Amino acid sequence: MKAINSSCILKAQQVVEEARKKVEHTPYRLGYHIMAPAHWINDPNGLIQWNGEYHVFYQHHPYSPKGGPIHWGHVKSKDLVRWEHLPIALAPGEEYDKSGCFSGSAVDNNGTLTLIYTGHISLNEETDEFREVQCIATSEDGIHFTKHPQNPVITEPPAGGSWHFRDPKVWKHSETWYMVLGNQMDGLGNVLLYESADLVNWEYSGILVKSDGKLGYMLECPDFIELNGKHVLLSSPQGIQPEGDLYQNLYQTGYLVGEFDYETKQFTHGEFEELDKGFDFYAVQSFEDEKGRRIVIGWMNMWESQMPEQEHGWAGALTIPRELQLHDDGKLLMKPVVELKSLRENNISVQTMIVSENVRLDEVKGDQLEIIAKFSLANTSAEKFGLKVRCSENGKEHTIVSYDVKEQKVIVDRSQSGRGEGGIRKGKIEMLHHDVITLQLFIDRSSLELFVNEGELVMTNRIYPDPASLGVELFTEGGSVKLIELEAWTL
Ligand code: FRU
Image 1 (spheres, rainbow, N blue to C red):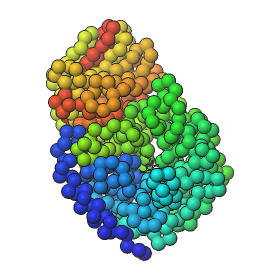
Image 2 (cartoon, protein in one colour; image 1 turned 60 degrees about the vertical axis):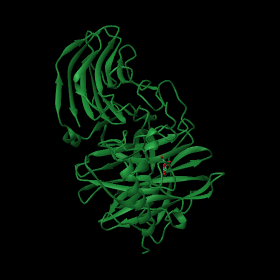
Image 3 (cartoon, rainbow, N blue to C red; image 1 turned 120 degrees about the vertical axis):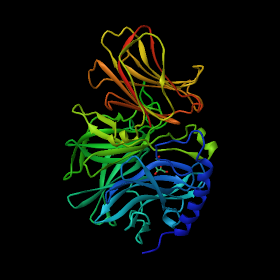
Image 4 (spheres, rainbow, N blue to C red; image 1 turned 30 degrees about the vertical axis):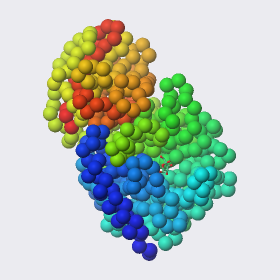
C-alpha cells in the first residue's frame, strides 16, 4: 500500500495550527459546535461510531477561510458533545484527487475504518471542466489513513451521466455493500445505486431516484437509510424553485420516504419534504450509533451566503448532533441528542405568566444558551408572540423567533440580527394538533438552532450580533398569550 501523502498533511496541519491561535478569541467563534481549528469547513463527512467513539470528518480547506482544494478534517468524541481535534485525515495529492477530496462516508470493514470519498480533478478552472471519481482510504488506528492502491475504485459515471458524480454514502445489507451517489443526467439530478462485495469492486445497479425537474439539476450528498420500517433518502438538491415559504435557500436539504425492495432495487416514495426550514442547513449526513439511534449532522451554512467570520480567519461550522425519527404520518423529526443536556450550567426558571407586552428577562442573558419556552394556544388573543434573543441594551438589535397564530407559522426574523444578510424564514406547523407550542433554542455565539414541538419543525440559522447583545425578551403583538413556563441554561 502506498503511504498517504503525509507531507501534504503535515504542511496543512502546520498552517492550520498557526492560524488557530489567531482565530481562537474572535467574536463569532462558536462555543460548543464543531468547527475547523481555523479556516474553511463545509459538509460533514464519514460520520461513524467506531470502537465506541464518535468520529466526524468534514470538508476542510486548511489554507484559507474560503474554499479551495478540499481536505478531510477530523474530530472525535466520546459523548457527541466534547470534540477532540485529530490530524487532517485526507489531503488531495494523487492524480485522481488532486483538486480535492470531496464528500463521502465511513464504514467499519471488519475493524478497518474505511473512508469512501470523491476524488475531484479539475481540468480547466475557467470553464469549470472536471472529472469526479470514487476512492477509498483505510485506517487501523482511526487517525492515519492510507489511500487504496486500486484508487479510483469507480472511474467514471454510467452511460449518459455527467461528471457531476459525487458524495458516496455506503452501508452494508446482508453481506453486500451498497453505495448511493449524486449524479446528473440530461441536466436533471439523479441518485445512483452501486453494489460491492469488498468495497473495491463496484457494480452499477441503476438509478434509485430520478429528478423529474421538480428535484432540480443535481442531487448532492444522498444518504439512504432505514427508519421505522420505511426507507428514507436524504439529499441536498440544487435547482429547486422557491414556492411560497418553501425552498427559500440557494440550495435545499430534504427527504423522500418510501419502500425499497433489495431484490428489484426499486424505491417507491412520496413527495420531497424539506428537513430544516432555516437559513443555514445543508449537506446533512446520518449514521446509526451503538444505541441504535439515527443521528444527523448538517453543515450550518449555505453556499454563497455571507460569512462575516471570514474576516477573522475562519468560516463555517456543523450543527449540533440531532436524533432523526420518523413519525407515523411520514414526516421526519429532528431532536437535539440528549447528551447535549450535559452542557447545561446555570438553570433559570420563569414561572407561568400572561404576556401582554414586551418583558425583558433580566435573569436570562447570554450568547451561549439553551431556552425552552412553552406557550399555551388556548385563549390566546395575541396575533403573534415569541422570543427576542441576542437583544442589545437599546433594543435595536435582536433576532425574533415568533409564532403567527393565524398563519400557524413559526418565523425566524434576522432582519435586525446584526451583520450578515438578514431575512425572514417561515415554517408551518401542520403535522400534529397542539394547544401548546414549545420553542427550544440553542444559541451559540453566531448561531441559533430552533426546535419546535419536539423536532416537528427545525430552523437552523447563523446570526452575527454584536457580542454585547445578550438580552432575552418575551413579546406579543395584538393581544396576550400565556407563557406556561420558560427554562433556560447557560451552556
Ligand atoms: C456539498 C458539496 C458536495 C461536494 C462538496 C465539496 O456542499 O458541493 O457535493 O462533494 O461539497 O466540498
